[in-house]
Structure formats: structure tokens, C-alpha cells
Length: 451
Image (cartoon, rainbow, N blue to C red):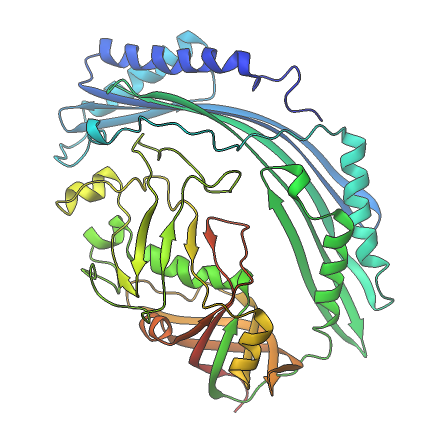
């Protein structure tokens, strides 16, 4: 499926979509709005899922939507439409204006400050359509699943494999005169299988995702990795309740950092709903911990020149020597706190967590004896109190080596203690998201299992 040729996302159509946003803003101005902003998104893609050698689903997607927010001196109204005809847009703007006239006044609402708008637009190399036909996509999904099923006789079932192609265009404009378009692609391959041995069944998965199809791991390697991960979980045991070091595998470690970014988000701060309330300038990590945001990395999944309000992003330190350097603010939360937007209306942009230089195996050896977590269950993270408690599975480690698989345990601690208890951060960085982080070793957590 070629997402470029004869596509609504082709370069020749970008100006047409920008004109739609510009016309929307003009309708808002004509309707009496003192400020207005509009965002248009168009996407198209193909998803194929297979299971046990058969095609389960083939789904073509093509979506579009336009959202408009208008401001009447502190009164806000919003409306949206998927119909991009002029009359439909006119009615949508009218609806937003009518809503604004009935909403309560909020002195903190409105566009981001005009002087914060992005003016430098780098080529971030985010648009790489996958020139592949539907039958080839099906063949890739089947190859991925079959490589897992054929890996070992103990692989007895499959939850399926999938291949996804997606291309999108977004346009954002506001009454400050800001009007910019971005095209992005995102492609992925995944597989999950089930293994059985001595009546014991386990499942696991693997996946890859990339802006550029040529940077994806091969379908075969993803299937084989899914099978390998599943097999090593066979004959899992439970643990006795105890205190021990815990090593979070890289693909899970980003969740610890995500809990931190949630706690320093603007909304959590002004609502006083964070265990890191008023923590700017506080040391919450060991002094070797460095977190730096890098929004301009070519082809990275969270790269952006500007946020959802048009505010320029920047390469900046979020944590230096363990000390919090900044909150994550959009314009509304910034005003509530008496600060300025930090360009985070659309979240974090490639947050890089510096490694302490050790490989994954060296982190295992440094732990010596403890619990390697490879799967987490549940949502037991309370960013108001910092309490952390989640179901987990993984491996018990003895003498720096994997000893046996572990299942049905709970790991618990307080996030403040977890942050301060970080011993090592591996160089096995996982780039499949907006947080780039290696494995994280924490000195001590409660592992709840059998009495």
C-alpha cells in the first residue's frame, strides 16, 4: 500500500488543508472571537492481523477531523467535525461560538503567548510511507507468526501477529498568525504466542515500531524473539514475600520515568495532586541521573518543532544531577502557576535518560541476587501519594544470572524511595516511545508472594 502516490497526504494537498484551517480561523474572527485556534488531522493506513496461519482482519483506515476552539475574553467554546465541507465547518464554528457565550469566564484560558510561537521549523525526517502492497503486508504478518510457531515444538498456540502502516498529516493554526503542517508516518510489527510444558502454559510477545519501514526489525526476528521470550517463562514459580533489589527491563523502565513526568506535569501541580508538589529545584534522584529532552532527533517517535499550541519545543534539561530543573507546562497550567508554557501541551518530546554505562548483563551482575521484572500488570501507581504496587512477572536472579522464571508476585514501594534507590541505568536503551531509557536497577522493593 503506497501511502504517497495518489494520496490525500501528498505534498500538493498540504496547502489545501492549511487553507481549510486558515478559513476556519477567519470564520471564528468574523463570529466575534477575540482569539481562536484550530487543528486538522488526516490519516490513512492499513492493519493486518493473522492468527494460526490465517488472516483474521484486514483493515483500511482513512480518517479526518477538524477541531476549533474560540475565546471570547476568557470564555471558551470548542467544537469538532469530520466533515470538511465549508458549510459543515461554518456550522462547527458557530457551535463553538455559541458554547463560548454560555461558559463561565476563566482568566487563565486562551492561546499560548504569541512570543512563544515556534519560528524555526527543522526537517525532522518523520514522513516515510511504506511502499508495500496489501498482499505483501499479509505475507509479512504470516512470516512473523510462522517464525514464532516454528521456533520450538513447545510453542503450541498464537495470539496472532500484526503489521500496521499509518501515515498522517496534522495542521495547527491560531489567531496569532501561526499556521503549520506536519506529515508523519508510524509503522509496526508485533507477535504474541503461547508455549506449553508439563501442563504449564505461558505467553509473551515482542514488537517493533518506527517512522521508517527500513528501520523496523525483520518480521522473522520479531516472531523468533516473541517465541524465545515465551519459552523462557515456562515452569515459572512464585516467590516468598521478601525485600530485594529489582531490575526493570528497558521496555518497562520507561514507565518509572513516566510516573515522574506525570508528577511534574502542570495539571498535577496546580491541582495539588502530585507527590512531587512544589518540587522544582529538589533533588529526587541520585546525582548521576540526567534527563534531557531532545525534540529534534531525526525520525524519532516523539520529535516535534512545536507542541499542540504552537509553542516552540527546545532541547533542555529536565533533571540535572538528580535535581528537577523544570515542570512540564502547557499555557493553561503555566498561568495557573504564575509561570510560562514550557512547550508541553502535547506531552514529552524524546526524553533521554542517561545511562550509567553498564550493559544489561552488567546490571544483572551488579544486582547479584534479586528480581528481574519483564512484565507488569494492573495500574497500581498513585501519583498523588507516590504509592507504587503492581503485579509482576519475570526472573529470579542468583549470582548475577537468571535462575528461574517467576510469576504471580506484586512489587511495591513508594516512588520517592524508588527514585532515590536507583543504582544503575543500563545502556540497553529502548527507543520505541517518547522516553528513551535502558534497564533500571532499584536497590530495594517489597516483593509480595507466598507467605
